[in-house]
Length: 351
Image (cartoon, rainbow, N blue to C red):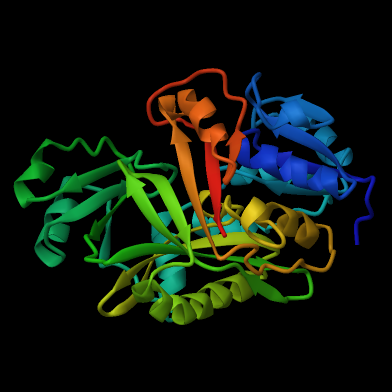
């Protein structure tokens, strides 16, 4: 166990790091952020901030030596950078990143554990895409295998001829057949160092333009019927990875059952409601897990919860949002408002 007073290192300086830092400090830990950006909303609420690139081995080594344990708030931290952490414990493991950073690896890993995914095919050339359109058909989505989030790095192909204008430009890609679903939902778990897993109620999610707009708990009947199978698969993945910390798994609810979409080896946007809406938040349980503490209760703190992201100029409605006493408003301290940027979220508890 890592005792309170020690330093937790967080790789990445965004809003997830900010909320992790706040949870860590409530438990008595200090926080050191490592992020290349000069402006870090996580560093604003932390004791230390190393501003250095991911390939700065000496800076990473110095950062690691100042920390009792290291975690990450961003799954695209370069694997090579983690070698600079030396003997300092890293949770979740490098293996979790190796799987989650590549959509092809991720789907194959989940399929090998018995999970159901969308039909997919690796795309390296224009000829590969032609073959995928023959084998899988359209509509579908062409995605970069690495990076890409909130709808970035994706091209929806409604008809075969729409693929003709897409420049592959030597990128490693994956083509996925479109899944016909009734709802989207997420399974979020925390796994401790003793292998014990706890789950929060699954949120039913609504996306707009590829960005999560709203999460509602409890989910509707169509999702509830598939949560058991989805949780069983999520736990298989976590156990196979020897995972420690919080992880999120996104699913489609379909007539054939739960279809796995993707995983995030970190705390997740669709779990932000847990700060006020659950006995223990995803952020606190992540800190508990990586420090070797017992995991906290995950039961609902209200009859229901709704979380809505504040995207772009939604943040300008802060006065109206705060006027409703049922709302809990979280702003991330981002100074620049731009379309598609997550500026905060608001959680509403249903009595």
